[in-house]
Image (cartoon, rainbow, N blue to C red; front, side, top):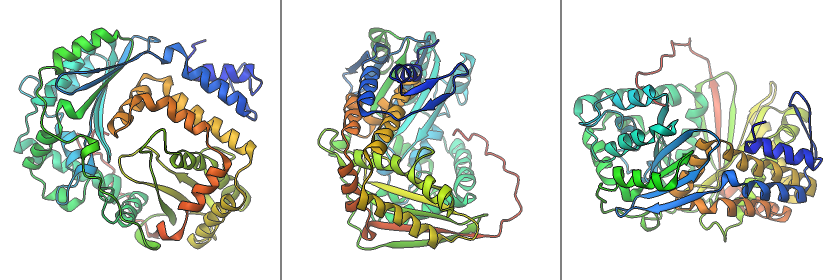
Length: 486
């Protein structure tokens, strides 16, 4: 049997009598005792296969984090730039994402298209992604090809060639991506309009892909300015996870990245705080778009983690999210969908890890014969139950086990391990905080869940967005634009 982290969890739970393991590998989950949870999470956190993280700082400011995982001869290498759409200004929204596309257009040494061809020829895979808070590029391939991946990635950190001709082609690709994934997707459009209303001044109000008008008027000089400003070793984190020797990875990093000059820029901690002013009453928006069914989103302003050790509210909110959603016995699914049959589906969403403020989302689709007004009342009722009656110790222990298991499952793949490290480092936290975060989640009490629900789930911080479905148009051929990367 291959002892990945999931197998280890299941074996430990079976040993403790908390699950049944059958020959066909189906699992019947029983109630997780809190003492069992502590034992399991401690065992997994300290497992040797998941340890061995090494951190280096090059003279030019590039941070290198290497994590050994020798279960297979594979390596993931990621470069995270601490710049995302949060750093954009009005008029050039979407430029972070546009540059992500342009990063594959080549250098003098590696012409347009050759980067991806070289990785594919080596049997690897590569891509990139842009978020509100960061932009990242990755390759996953056999460990013998790590030198090639580092050479390619470091080359485009400093030698990218941006031409007007290639930009004019790629900006059309991005605009079509926006049409396909937002303008023609009713729920995505509703979410975009809601975010623009929920945030008054914070950059999170603008979509990562950018407003169409800004894309239509963007120039190659805008992408070049973004590249010159943010793509520097002292604004980047290089994460390497896999079957590697840390000293050899450091040598490769010095060889490929060490000669790139640092640039003057502000670290995340010194950038303008961009504080969102308090909301002073409920905001409501209705969006009309072609769709089969109505859709409701309710969003409450809540905090994200800023001090991993001192904060407790974000961890309580994360546990609350799983009380409401995420598994078959979660409250929203149990009450709104199965018992009362008010909704076809209902869920909750929250991210505790972000450079800016966060929003706690509740969403649902009404069942036939029900309205979005019925849904809103039902969702409010579930929150009131939390505030009034709290959660039971049995429910809390079960949810904690599921939340922490979810965190631990991330360590089952080298890609997920790299993602966890890179994300924390890119929002101003540290990869060393991972175990502290798990401990803080385990320490959440039922009373703390009641407190955050009472404090943050109020109408003054609420934004309500409703999708008013319009007749569906005949479907046009869904053809992905050439060059679409993700």
